[in-house]
Amino acid sequence: QKEVEQDPGPLSVPEGAIVSLNCTYSNSAFQYFMWYRQYSRKGPELLMYTYSSGNKEDGRFTAQVDKSSKYISLFIRDSQPSDSATYLCACQRAAGNKLTFGGGTRVLVKP
Amino acid sequence: DAGVIQSPRHEVTEMGQEVTLRCKPISGHDYLFWYRQTMMRGLELLIYFNNNVPIDDSGMPEDRFSAKMPNASFSTLKIQPSEPRDSAVYFCASRLGQGTYIQYFGAGTRLSVL
Image (cartoon, rainbow over all chains, first blue to last red; front, side):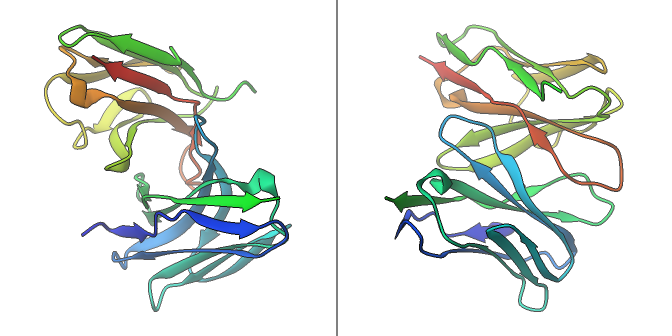
């Protein structure tokens, strides 16, 4: 079983809808949680970065971490066609150097 | 800053040939990571360097793979001999020091081994 699990999708939503993405992880030592966005044939780019539990908001994006249930979420409000991409969650231990990625969820926002 | 630069962007080669992938990290970053991405296995860490020194190569699939970082601005990943199952997208990422865990990725090299 993988340390970080993510539904591969695809997740198809109409423009303007809220996109809800999530990951589960098994390693309780993970302290840093990230969401990367990857467009087709591009490298992953950092979207959100969270330390430990709690919420973080940045524009249309909200990241949530619930360490008690080992569950991380990303919400995209007012989704746009330009949000169509694969979203990868990633986790890291404190004082560690290795990111463990989920398999990615492909999102399609239809105009 | 130009970001992490990888070359070539695409590589097509025949089985048995040597393949060399190149990476230039962001200036000043002291960590460099090599990843492989496939549909089946997702994004996997192969090896990472700190201050040009290989720290963890446990993700390197086998002896056919080798990586070097001769200086702070250049790294290579070499596959010799290449096999069709090595076909994947290879990414390089760099990071600045301790205290932040944000890795910045290059655009990747798409490798096809025929």
